[in-house]
Image 1 (cartoon, rainbow, N blue to C red):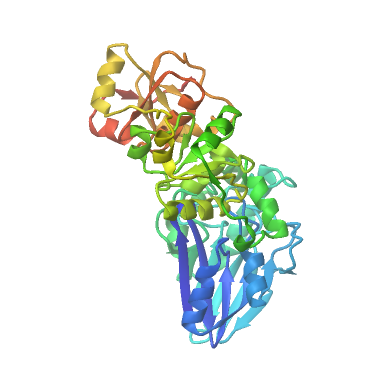
Image 2: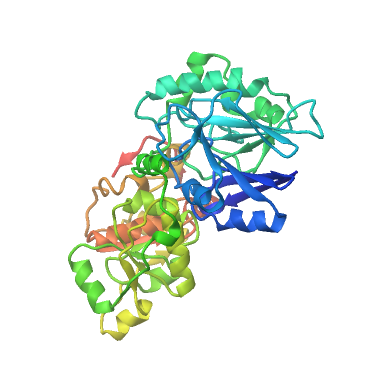
Amino acid sequence: MHFEQFYLGCLAHASYMLASEGEAVVVDPQRDVDIYMKSAEEQGVRIRHIFETHLHADFVSGHKELAARTGAKIYIGPNGGATVSHVEVRDGFEVRVGKVTIKVLETPGHTPESVCLVITDEKRPAQPWAVLTGDTLFVGDVGRPDLSKAFTPTVLAGMLYDSLHKKLLTLPDDVIVYPGHGAGSLCGKNLGSARSSSIRTERLTNYALQIKSKEEFVQELTSNLPPRPEYFPQDAQINRVGAPALSELPNLKPISAAKLKTLLAKGATALDVRPMDDFASGHIPGSIAIPLTGEFASWSGIVLGLSSRPVLIADSDERLAEARVRLARIGLDDVQGFLQGGVKAWTEAGFELAETPQANVHSISRRVQAGQSKLLDVRRRTEWEAGHVEGAHWRALDDFKAALPELNRNEDIAVYCRGGYRSLIACSLLQRAGFKKVINVTGGFLAWEKADLPREAEKPAAA
């Protein structure tokens, strides 16, 4: 048997391919499916089956394109309302691929249609070898229960408890657990960074599996949930019907500096994907910084939304192409174009650049103590409540799209997050909205803690 995990760090997403005797199965494919085609060619196998553990909300699946290119069947669990051509699978459904058997477990809870896939190899038939758990069971966590329109979070959390205790935890301890996401995903509260685990390890260490009472489990799972991005329901709907192939997307159109200036005056969105320091030292006024490093796709969806139609600003053709694919992975397909010639073309056209001042934590601490700057924390609530800088105001970056912080736009505002990535995004949004002076705190709260500067853990002074 050939088994391969494909991990997409930008979305903290794991997909899988397993093959035996010339046939292959792909599970939870990402939108750009060439990686599976290439692997199948290298292994000398044909992709015959495509399983979705559920209708994903945090990314757009490539199941429709992969099926069209290979002739494979798509398998999806019940109660999801999928209209893409597929086979509905329920408890006990099996697919045999060479010497490998894939058995479906219905495990509703994260979503109504969630399933897990139990893998048994003929070479060791006494017990299953592994289970692909999708977003039902993660390393150190379980799936969030608030992504359905048809069921309340309380109902789904109850379903999830039953799915875990009556299905997954009845598997032998040695069965390997391969989840659908890792650390950084918003599909759970606090996912671990390991790419796999075991039933035994999760039984002993996963906080959610330590809760014996169903009532306590439901209470825990429905409280302090991470923010649910606006684009999640949109991605789930795209996956119900199947996304168009990436090759069907229109080519990016070049846009001159003069044209971009006109578009910006009319309220268009310019998305600068260059490295953080490059943006800080000089960028087009009104542009939004979301560097390609870090969780670019997720933050683009959260901050911009799928209907934003951005104009991309990059420093190379390679970065433009990468940004286009990453945006498409979350369903942000309608990109207006790109700034031809990049930032250099803007200055050559006689237009000025803006800067985003940056400062280290020692400098910012002195400014705050002297009353020269106010602090704004843009981390998520759980991060804030675990500890924050003394006297800081708080508004999570996730909430900027709904409303910006209510702070004086003429005052100096120093913005921090955990390490500096989210705070730069926040600074660009504040500058775009007319805040006169914002400063990005390099190193973020991690550097503040390391420097042992004043901090506290209290309820937020909302901004």
